[in-house]
Length: 620
Image 1 (cartoon, rainbow, N blue to C red):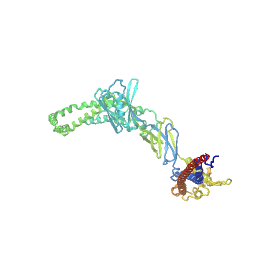
Image 2 (cartoon, rainbow, N blue to C red; image 1 turned 180 degrees about the horizontal axis):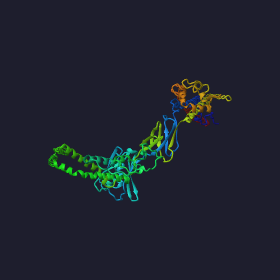
Image 3 (cartoon, rainbow, N blue to C red; image 1 turned 180 degrees about the vertical axis):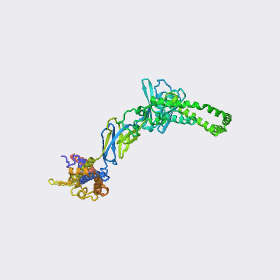
Image 4 (cartoon, helix red, strand yellow; image 1 turned 90 degrees about the vertical axis):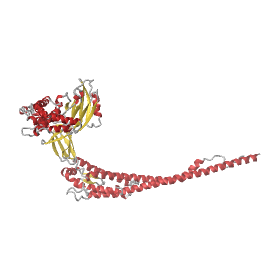
């Protein structure tokens, strides 16, 4: 019969026994850590909810304290297709009539059509817009698309867009300024040989042509006396921009009362400069305008012949001296200018003055000549013009774009269309935004009620179950609510009589502790005393500042809620350390216990072997 001591003949489940021993040691300590962490986390979350509800209320006070709530304006317009508007806090409530005479637009010019195989170059284009300009070199045998790439790809180009339009008769170059307004007019000067198609890409504004005519005329008249200039056959309405038409007394005529009269159609002799300076918004050079300028040019050209004989006689007088000075120029002794001045010095002062004026007249004419006698240039297809508005029928406003800032103090206008003749002007209405202030007050009341309900939920005790909120018994909650209600019930001394407490705004505390609004009383204050509301809410001692300061004492960096949150966070850190210590101890306990059972199992195995041998010997 074999002997098997209990536990020896069967194997031992070491892992199960070790786990039970370690759990018996770990569980009570782990439960303590878990319970404490759960309590701390619940408290941190509760304080976070409380702080958030208070900070929401504090944030609403910022607008009131800085008077922003009472500075908001609402703007409406009777015709959104003509004008819209925005208003800042500086805007004064009122109604304003807006008559849009013209919209701002960018300058645009176009070339004639070319054949597909037209080759341009060599040469150079100088493109100007406003007070800026850039050069584009054009190589031989360039196509129109190459010129477009050259213009758009030039680094110095900061405001001109070039494109090609494929007309039914061939491609056409279009140049447009990226910026609207009169100050951003385009101008294209061309350096190329006569006959080069590049010459056809030049463009001079009407004002440029007029200025050149005036300069040439003045120079010629200084030599030959007053010229008889051509008469204009253009009616005033075709010369003056719409925004500049006036009545017989020089008063501005609004567009809705303008009409054609017999006086408008009469012919009158008009100075060339007056016509051109008033015609800045003519789309291109209309036939009457161009013919008038060409006629003026013809007079100036013809006048060149009037002094050629006199000029030749004066030059003949100094021909020998001029030849001698020219030789000195060739030897490098004199410059061309020095030789010219010395030759002129041989004349009598009056003769020298006459000859110099003739040279100036010829020089001015040479600058004028290409504008009227070279190949056809590009034409204007859209004028670069400012927006023009008449405010309340009397004030004329303009802008280089379609947004007129501070057209009325604190009001920006965005122009969208032109006023139509015979229709009343669009009207802009600026009002105090009472509804916005009403909403801000409602939001404040709602924010307080949210805080109050949150604080009750966090600090209450269920009378049935006895379950406590995470902040039950915490004095911080009671103190916060008491501090706020003290401000609610205390008057603001610097506020006007009748506007010194919340109750005078119709805001009272219910039996349940919430705030409620009497809207009849609130609306009466908003409608009758809107301009004085800021005295109650604003300032360093106003209602808004008192609420902010009170809440800051709880939610600020050194406030009681923040201090409590930091303390709880530090406790959480300590629990984390306790958890790490417990884990290390349990790991060590598990290893020691496992080693003991392993050693016991090993010893038991050896004993079983010896016992088996002994039993075998006895059996023999």
